[in-house]
Length: 468
Image: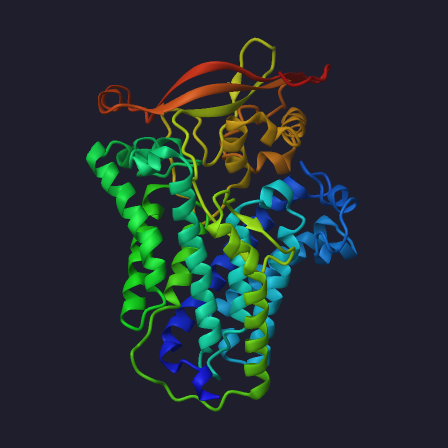
């Protein structure tokens, strides 16, 4: 079955699998460090309460057999340890079946977390990691030649990621068609990075070039991925370059890094490498899984062609084939929900988050590929209170109680009440914008902010509250 193999892609497979294991490691570390506060037994959205209303078919997960914070920690840290081993080459140092098992376990453990993660795990890059991880099972290890089928399916993922993002932009906000969206995006994106202020201050003609180049790469390069070499490698290089630009300009968790990882699989050495004969059972499994992916691709492909295209949706609970997209609309103004506490009800002090804007003088930091889940959801909360309705009141009550797990989600020095919890907490809404060059020189501040008004009425140790 040599016609099913592509030995010249041994380097692409190596880069893809090692990088993907690194992304898995980040995902498991995020779960281990944030999961208890967000979805633990006493978290903001507890897993036991969620699973009480979900069947195995709706949310397949190891936690359907029983949840505890200790089991969640075991899954998270166990997944992190396995990811380290795979990134170090363990899956290549064992027989083929054992290498496949390593990747299958990584996929199963992370699937178990995502399917109970609720709104905290509703991001497209969760499905992207799972879909890529499932294909890694059928990519083999160093004992067999890379299968052409799996390599093509990896490019099919990358095609959907890039073209999905490109089409949703052209079909969505008119500023993408007018090439003006980047007048706003660097300032209003969910979590700006350390260089976002400078990106925002680029001349407007360069912003238009940015937007135009984005369209060319997202809609043109994915098609070229299916060209003979070196065309596919050149297309992958364009995608990697664009993704690195996005890494520099903002914090998008591991979305850019998984996309880069997918593109690396298209790298070919241009020569063949000798491999033993591919086991028949492995070739059969690869072809069978390829057929399954083709069947499951019907709805995502139809979504790409639809004028009512949706972004970031899983069409199956195993996240095997999904639809992707980003920033079909761009907000023109930035609002931030600021959480505040008070000891006396008169003097209010703000809680500071790790990544999202707070203190105007604090420069945005680089966190990606690490994912600050609460910070991201706070951005969505500022867009629409409906996003925060299930968890914001519990979050305020945790602050009122001085809950240690919740406070760990904030900056180390972000708790203005380190000795005793406040008597009152509230949420207010501010309008944020990047300072001008003159303001930056005069004040040293990165942001200028103005109070818009209340967002959530105050809670106290004596009274409860309702939404504004």
